[in-house]
Image (cartoon, rainbow, N blue to C red):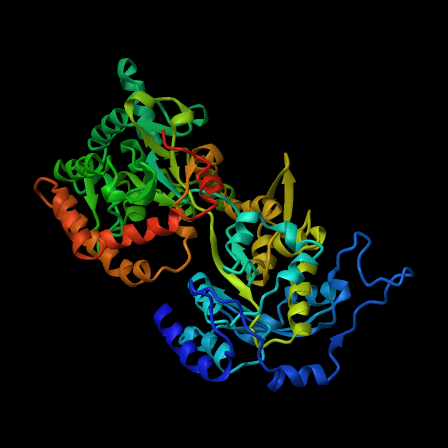
Length: 573
């Protein structure tokens, strides 16, 4: 997509838009363009909001001597191009949330949804053909491509003049929106919370049964005081027992066909992320010191018959295996807990149970495995976590100053604290409730009224939304159970992948898809077939597909990344 977008924009914009050159590192600031077409026509129609009257001091500046957004002329009729929430443009524009936003902000916004097909072409046309849009949702890759081509309008002065926006995001988040010239070119869609998304679901009832029968060799049950962890030797013991509990066509553990590197197991072998710092340099997982031990461990589970691997999409997956009782352990994402817990065949809820409020005591979750010498120590648990900018709202370079000021002011007004809460989780007592300082959805009202609320977000109050967003992980008690378990102490146990913060990189972008596929295929053949695991075969696939070049490119960026210490807040054990 990056290649296609860059090619289209380079050719078309080189002829019609650009009047200057980019900086030497490819991240040019946007250049001035002539104002023409529908955008200019809107201005002539009188939809520009004049700056507010100065106060009686005669100054158009705020009391602290700095300009505010009230001091700018602003276009109040704006067109916004966004992603595809699965409904029509007409339905989205008629959605009650759109009316609430219009009344609260004073802006007349027309929303256009990205088509389900040829979405990249539709977005690139906005910039190539100078179409009449003032706020456009783009991916991270598109953002950096557009910025390097001078297709985005800098919005720094408007952000600095905002009432809420400039302080609503962390400096790291804003840093991800700046060009090499220091200007801000978009409002980043930063993930609301640092979190882990998956853990090992396991049959807690079977584990309790084992412990009752074996008081002299009990397995430490994952719980809050041990960070919901389990040491390797206990995990092995548990799998051996589970193998006696499953039917003849069952397995102690099940693994989906998309998995060769399981995030909840890798940390037990000292592999803490896909890309992690080793001796001062970022190293991909298969080259990290503990990976061979991990791979041999997984290979042994398969070869000994303790682990089942789903070889194709037609084969039974982990969730179905757990539901049917044919498996005792499997990786689960937090949105998969509800079907596991409510449809477990040999422990179904009583008829008439409200399933949204139901949790199944037969199912437990492990945040991560730990080495035996870390058994029971919550401070030694490490989980794969993530938080980064995945999208941006940008102002096209062909927008007028009044349109740019209006676009940022629109985003800013929606971040007024009470309004932001209303727009994200609704009304207390109607769509959500507060219990001990935490936000919980009121169902079904929350789903009925707030289902599309996140689609209307063009900016966020990061600290507030990190709390509000949790209501979405609590839409069922089963989901709340797994999410709170795997994230019980994530701020001190979660290790993030620095490469998620890397701007588009030519070597990485051109090689990664083929490289990742080659390594995955090699791991499948080595891990989930009879025979001894051979790391050299996997490393050969890595090298043959530009793995060394990718590593060098990643580290060239990493060595200059000023925010890496702030990003790497949790250290390996």
